[in-house]
Length: 251
Image 1 (cartoon, rainbow, N blue to C red):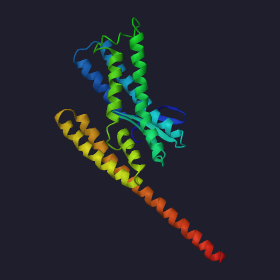
Image 2 (image 1 turned 45 degrees about the vertical axis):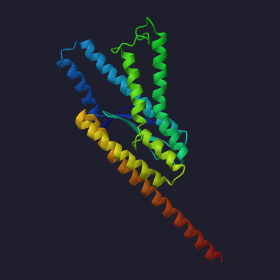
Image 3 (image 1 turned 135 degrees about the vertical axis):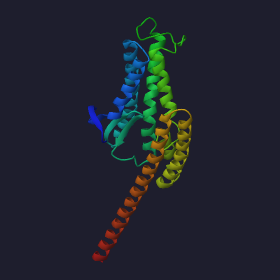
Image 4 (image 1 turned 180 degrees about the vertical axis):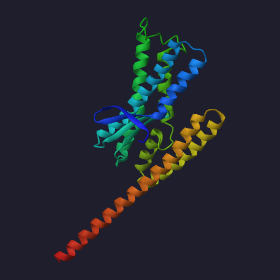
């Protein structure tokens, strides 16, 4: 992706950060600084943001590593201010495979939630631990747990091409053709994206960006799916023609 720089790799999957992510860090740190927050509070806010994006990165690796089980490599993973993006070499052909790959990301966040809950419950007296029965809204771990819950809920919204939308398409594709299943998932996703834009005007500009991303991402995914299906049909027709020509020559 243009405007992104590499920060590392795992299992030959390059990890990149888009330059706009740095603007997000500056914005968070700058707001706290001009509000008069002490340096340790500013460092804690930036540290919390980095931990959130670590959870997002692990989410994307959930997709990437589950796709690798089906022989589908991942080109790279890029962190953006609105989340992460794992670029697979191709979309899983079988609906069941796509279902597993789509669920794998939110499943990672569920795992993080369980780990955080266990640490908070048994970590009384530890620097990072607290009693989960006395939920302190300013606790680092409690906020991180709540963010991961939000990530699971948000990603399961059936707005294609988000995880929930891909799960919806994979389930539809078990009964319908992939193109038809994609068209249905895309239309549902675009309706939801319009809802995000409307809510964004009322509450948060970030929702507008997410709505735009979903709308045009769904449109691009539909185009890709239709073109891939057309290429597959052309290859099949050419294969049949070659076989027919071969049989005519033998006869």
